Amino acid sequence: KEMDLTKDKIKKIIDAGTNVLFTTKGIDDFAMKYFVDAGILAARRVDKKDIKRIAKCTGAQLLLTMANMDGEESFDPKYLGSAEVVTEERVGDNDFIFIKGCKATKATTILLRGANEFMLEEAERSVHDALCAVSRTLESNSVVPGGGCVETALSLHLEDYARTFDTYEQWAIAEFAEALLVIPKTLAQNAALDAIDLLAALRVRHHAARTGQDEKKDYKWYGLDLTNGVVRNSVTAGVLEPMV
Image (cartoon, rainbow, N blue to C red):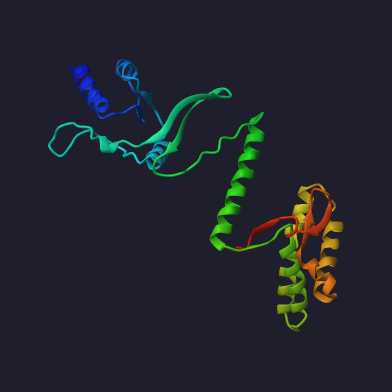
């Protein structure tokens, strides 16, 4: 009797036009047989976070039960989502189910591959930082020169501003100006470069931009070029970062 009840449930799902099924629970072998015979791709033990994303992308509805208001069991076709292609492909040592052309949204999954876990973790951090930078840029709708340019310029400005005080406030402002230089200094150290020389060259350029002639005004856009170990115009080099 239990098998007949299960068969009836599966028949209602099949009759609704289902061709792909995802569930967070398990699927028994005899139940899987009915799905296979009907040509339905059934994936079991899907993570709850993943199944929520799938439902949101395809426009499907998550169901906890097939029971309706009349106390009977039914499966309405309106519960189904839509996608152009759903395939199972092997990538590396693992099999993945790819859902392409989702109906409700253009959300995309980035699949990272690497020689080992350390490379994958580093790649994931890099992609995460890049996505966060794009997100913050869209939120603030403004960009500034990168490579430690803003921190260096602001540090010089605060050093001059601190000298206008003859109280303890001068020390607080001067210390904050010094703390801002930690950013370009850390960038140079992470690139295995001489932070003292690069920071000195960067400060000279920004000081010249503040006090020099018109031909030196472009020095205010200068930041670190960690590839070549020099300072350069970050704007013309396309090195920008979110303002906020």
